[in-house]
Image 1 (cartoon, rainbow, N blue to C red):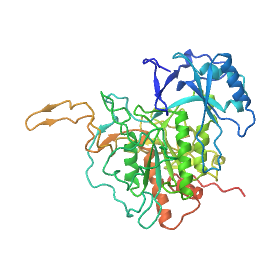
Image 2 (image 1 turned 45 degrees about the vertical axis):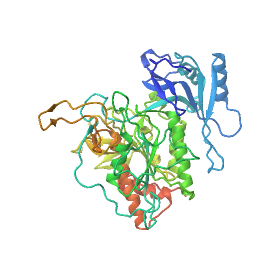
Image 3 (image 1 turned 90 degrees about the vertical axis):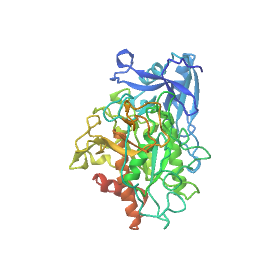
Image 4 (image 1 turned 120 degrees about the vertical axis):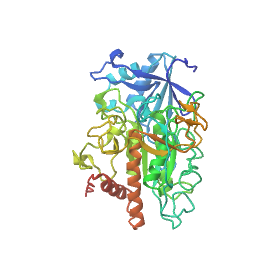
Length: 487
């Protein structure tokens, strides 16, 4: 399919591009009695959570019939198999419709959803486009990315390195923090195989949509999200130097990722984690996942959307993996996802109290959503907030690592004298550090704190069952009470 170059596009995991739409509530017809809201989505794909087994799926059959009635060709893409889970696969499909550049799946989805009961309707949705939570729009604004200098020594580990990045010399298992983002570039803190697990793969392929290398620049400028993943990794490393960091590149340099690609990536990350738990060579058990991205759903009435993304995040947590998500930088109180799936809380003196204790489950820890604070502790003006935000951490003017290979085409505004004096080169990061603001950089602060608690528990010989250990770390860092398991 040849796309019109003027059509907004988003990267596809196959290496191509997909047409993208922005839903405008004022211009969109809807057969259902719902309040529409703006959202980005892939114009020619839907996602459906199918029913297990070989039984017919009436909802999928209805989609096929309606597509055929519109002379649309429907291609079905299942998730990759998960070999260590007894051959089981999360039931679900991405449905690609062959259509011209002006085509749009919205009308088909709306027609099918209008003829479907509420519970069934939760199984089908748009292929939303998630956007990374960076601060700044590409033009110079307060809190946007800029080069910086970090005086002083690098963070120091307290445990000598072992044979693999996730082991110490004494075979103590380091906490593993997976950063699902733009990848991790070159930096003295993160080079070699001591801190970053750079050779991670599942069945010979990368865990994420792309290889783990950080994207660099366009011919005219550094990509808007260039350095985003490296910056997050640097924050984690400063908070918990003994953590091992797993780069999982799912986001391109424009900061966008399709929901379906994120689902595929997280399924493969879960597979990598389960292989690590089983002791498989070259695989590590994962302790924490950091997600600094999100999407706003097309309807505020769909906040209980039970799609596949929510399902794989729940499966990761059932396997003892903590999920830390940034709250977003819209300065709003409207939920974005996956951050909005965190249990609602009341924040009191820096601790979180559940509004409904029944929201906390003993068999898996909650999603933890993080807002951004100013240096004086007040909530940053750009930070989203609401009862779905678990806690707030420093997120304004953060200093962290940037790839030393990044040196864009911009020049200093002033260069005078002999010897030469100049203003800062706005996109020269060869010094290795930058300053940036956003909830993206508050989330890894919490992730580092959780990693440090897990490490201290292991050092003290308290290697509890994974879910119990995860919950203990959550309670220690956020104050959320550990639920009592059902008898």
